[in-house]
Length: 115
Image 1 (cartoon, rainbow, N blue to C red):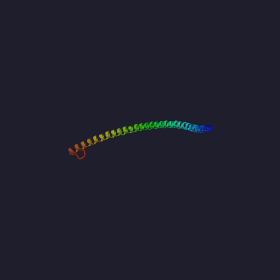
Image 2: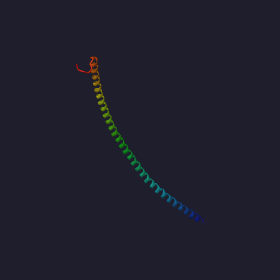
Image 3: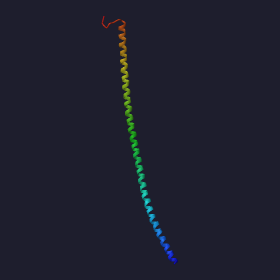
Image 4: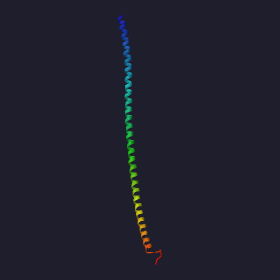
């Protein structure tokens, strides 16, 4: 009778060990799958980082190019304003000369006809 109780306990223990072994296999499979997913996620993160870095470099390059173009355009506008200032100064000098000639003529009592 003692051996029957022992055999029953041994059978229950063996069944329990079988269940634990099956659970262990499941956990090992889950761990392997998790490692695969983690490796894929790491590659995905690395790839995303590379894409972000490449995008950032492209944006910075485009901004630098745009800055150079805008700077060149400002230089052109500045030069054109300098040219206009020069022309306006010449017009001002010409107007001053005309005023001086007219003033001289008026002071001499001229009516615009030759004498």
